[in-house]
Amino acid sequence: MSDDNPYQPPSVAVHDVAQADPRARLYSVAGITLAAFVGSAFAGGLLMALNYRSLGEPVKARNALVLAFFATAAVLALAMVLPESVPGLAFVLPQLLVVQMLARKLQGVAIGAHQARGAAMHSNWLAFGISLLVAAALVAIAVVVVFLLPASLLA
Image (cartoon, rainbow, N blue to C red; front, side):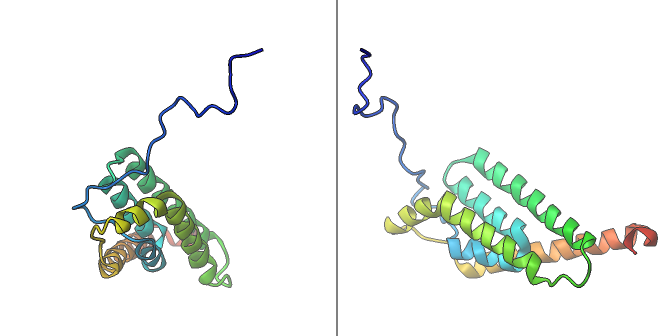
């Protein structure tokens, strides 16, 4: 027989939820979702990256930004390829739902623990403002791309 006891607790240390500095502020899941609604998946991913940075997880912060960038690029590419008859909601709703689900799954527990400790949170108004800046940057990029691309590619 083996010496392995299936009822013995694991010998590997179990880590608690990543905790932010109590003075640090995090964005709520609602703020992240609002940012994704107004400023695309990139805005929501940016706020998640800022949360990860506050939680002391720089690698996850970088990964959140990279994923958000590629998700936004994919949505913009789809918008250029699909016919104009496809409603805008078909682009907004999936982004919104995916960002909200990821924010809850990946950061919900840490955000909840942060709030339970009585630590301060960023305002949803700040999340809204950041999302407006991201949306303005995306519009500016789209305008530049439209003016730089030959007309034959846009038709």
